Image (tube, rainbow, N blue to C red):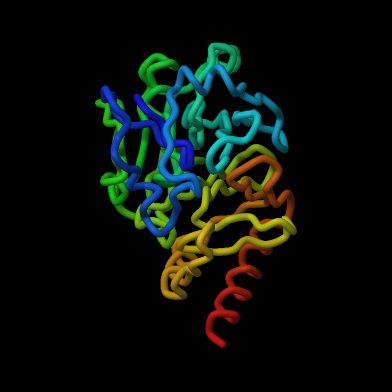
Length: 266
């Protein structure tokens, strides 16, 4: 089962590497400057390890050194169960043991196709837990599994405190997770790349393609704003280590919507 070295997506089992990676050939991503290259899970395990570290109060999991995009997964101990938010390309026994020591994982939830990575590998390593994806992005799944469950519409409540929100924009099914009760008072938003925490960690931005700098359409940003209305949160956890807005995040996101829409309307 080959893994693209640029986007980190694991493909279904084949005897030879796939001829191309449609995830990278899409204009939201890119083919590596050396051309399309592949690795395997076994080869990754020889060259990389997993970071298991605290990221602003939650257990984060990511590759070290950086590989592919590079996102980190994060464990959310919610009233909807222990959710593994996002996924990475490598699974290790150490990471599985660390998750099991915290009560295991009840469900994997992923924001959008760039972070599907080795989701089926993770599901199997964790005992066959379900993987929840938005059906609008079904075409981007490269390794299928009966454990994948698709949801539809603009909202999916997993519990009284946990709601999935289809933000759209970056991908049609780009999803944010709202956790009303955690990890601190005031709650948190986990938006993947639907809205991305920028380097000043005081704002977010909105891009159709982040590596190729294609702005998101104003209508998509306005639609996202509408769907997020009514959700309060003190923190935003971004896609990778430390890219978080800790405290007053709802106001920061609202100001970012205003800033972006003003800039693109000039």
